[in-house]
Amino acid sequence: MLPINPRDLQRQLKHLKKMGLKIETMQDVERVVIETKNKALIIEAPQVMVMEFGGQKMFYVTGQSVREEAIVTAREIEAPIHAVQISEDDVRFVAEYTNVDAERARRALELAQGDIAKAIELIQSGQV
Picture 1 (cartoon, helix red, strand yellow):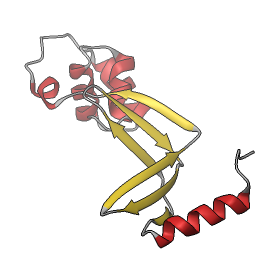
Picture 2: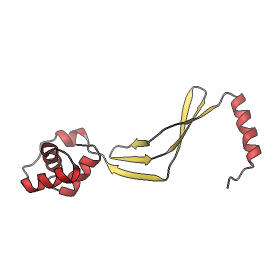
Picture 3: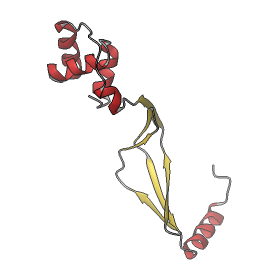
Picture 4: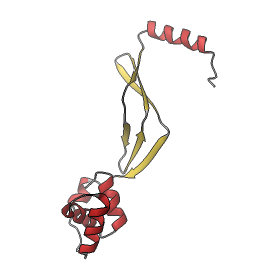
């Protein structure tokens, strides 16, 4: 329950609108991604309100499903990869599990230094 009377809230919103505040709800937002230096916060099926005042926009985002993902930087992707023995069975398994071609599965395994779980995570997060 709101800590404020709905009528008071409506009155306050009217007053703010008279002062030039614009409030809109964004429709059909599927997800919001907030990226930091080394991780991404993904908010699925969020509700997003945009408030504009004085030429600046503020976004108010709410959501029930929030997950974190590690970010692989371009430097990490382009860095020389140490020679890791990757078996064809591992490539085939990752390719079948993630429904991608063998070349993409091999690249993910190379980036993950042969770690199958990490390779799958890289593919599913769209980083490979």
